[in-house]
Amino acid sequence: MKIMILGGDGYLGWPTAMAFASKGHEVIAVDNYLRRNIALETSSEPLIPCPNLIERADIFQAVSNYKIKTAIADCADYLQLTNLFRDFHPDAVIHYAEQPSAPYSMIDFQTAQKTFSNNLNATFNLIWAVKEFAPECHIVKLGTMGEYGTPDIDIEEGWIDIEHNGRKDTFLYPRQAGSLYHTTKVLDTDLLWFYVRTYGLRVTDLMQGPVYGLSTAESDLDTRLLPNFHYDDIFGTVVNRFLVQAVAGVPLTVYGKGGQTRGYLNLKDTLQCVELAVDSPVKKGELRILNQFTEQFSVNHLAEKVQAVGNKMGLKVKIEAIENPRKEKEDHYYNAKHHGLMEMGLKPHYMTDEVVTKMLEEIIIRKDQIDPKKIMPRVKWNN
Image (cartoon, rainbow, N blue to C red; front, side, top):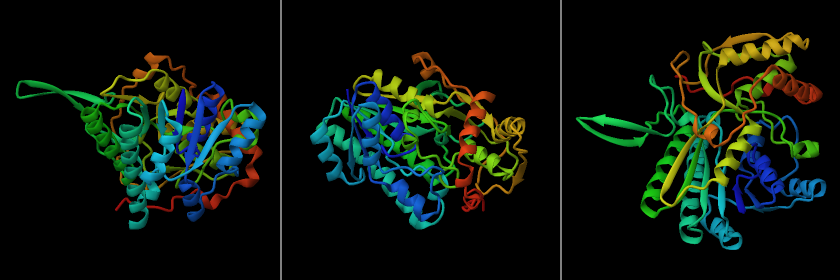
């Protein structure tokens, strides 16, 4: 297939581009370096310096003999995006092209506006580019489990059946996001659902939980192909942060009571899930929503897991509860359904002690590159 990856320079986008190219697909990775620029502006650079997108593609081709086309373009600019569609004619578009940080979206008006403008315009422009220039194209968009919030009932897979005054219907599951970033993802879903039922687009929306991991099969070919592994408070997911803190000798920072529970998955499983979605396109006029995670953990459970493995390795890991910088429930019910991708054939990489050990070993090699100043929370919206 001809696969266009928007946000192809990102933590998920770059490994996805390599994975599809390795399967023989014709791939183009599109990015405008928004995340790289924000990381520089906020002193949130990744643990491992990464070549730019064009250099990465050249390195990948040299070591694998697979080609990835690249385009430095802004998906929030409709003309730039439609020019890509006219030239490439994709069969599937994987949409990662959004500002992905909840803390960044909550710093001030400027960061909120940049998040809102980029994320909504990128999705809106993609919808219209597909409608006008590739109506048979399958959109696979990365959503987030954070859209659902933490309701006191089970979280269904995208949809919920409602009975009211003796009548029944099926609706999108109610959303109640905890940051502006997550709210833009809710609006994404609403936009897609409107255009799916109005113009018959084909869309799969993947509600992904926090991702962890340093490498994939393709990045093992050359360390310069590793993803953008962030451990800071802006872009670093909680597992990746804890792993780096354990190596750096910084107590694992549990926000508040630590009962916050979410669904997590390995980076390698993100690639599996996206491939399963692309390989099984939905019919015209269908919005398929899949909850994309493999295990549910509380923050306390994650901290204790990293501590136990780290201590076996002689790291002397400590855990420290700190004031929660976020406005969120710290002790709550959480039971999210996630059967769709399992039924499609997902073979999970669970967070075993062996997996945690291997990640810690990879970080220990790079211990001298850790900057402890990037770890503690610098953004608060708890008041």
